[in-house]
Length: 323
Ligand code: ATR
Image 1: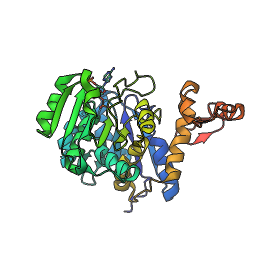
Image 2: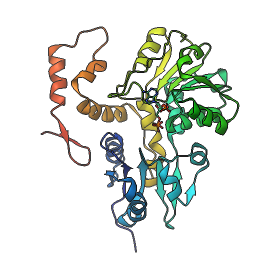
Image 3: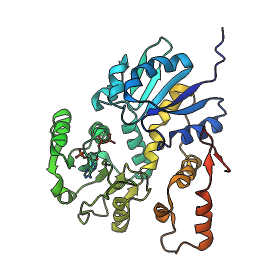
Image 4: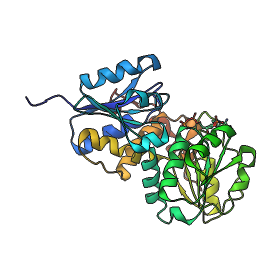
């Protein structure tokens, strides 16, 4: 019998309301003409195992995984890709037709494609990379950069023991520096990556001294809200090639969408615009400063337009609707 069920995918986490994935997948489903749905699901830790058993039975082909479940899902999957094993966390689950659950991690893929597109001048083998942070996101970054052939990774994190764990797991190409010395390891870096949550809306600013940056350095930030973080701002002023974090978010979603819905979606200007439109609708007025043209004061009419955007809301599938 033919399966006539509408294909479903989604994102599981707690909370999930911050996730931009529903808007992104909605855009791709619409542009690919697929009659499917992508649903955000807030699932508590205690319900995780039950949910992963039940979702395939409800017609889900897979899910993205966000905080705090990225590590916990590893023990609930029957198959794990090499890259997820190396990173120790998964952001994508695929529910296979035979009932098995495959766990993958596409964060590193997203980082790499984002860098290739945003900084085509960057050559992994050209020189050291500096990575701020040693959490789950940093693990994906370090593993990917090593795989790509970066000769040295200078790692620095507030909690030194976490950096040392990464050095133990990824080997001597990783060097560890105390967080208070973070500003001293920028000299000669070909790439600088912020993989901490510092600089994100609602979090403290990344206060690392950045005067060691040079115009040859490529600078990227995994934080995408705001789009232009202090790191990217200073990088731009120094003449560096800067790559914002939104592209990584978009690219890391491609492999999951392709596996679940059978189409490789485009990451193009329209995709960015679809997610950014939602981004502006959510970000509060104080955070809209980055959206102002840099050399012009925000005109009253522009402010009114942004003010109006704040009044828009969305239906449960993430489509923007009038209030
Ligand atoms: P993720 O999975 O997104 O990486 P995480 O594992 O909680 O999340 O890691 C968050 C990163 O941001 C860590 O590197 C964390 O430093 P610690 O390992 O010392 O916690 C870093 N971070 C968060 N808040 C910070 C702060 N106020 N100052 C410095 N680093 C901070």
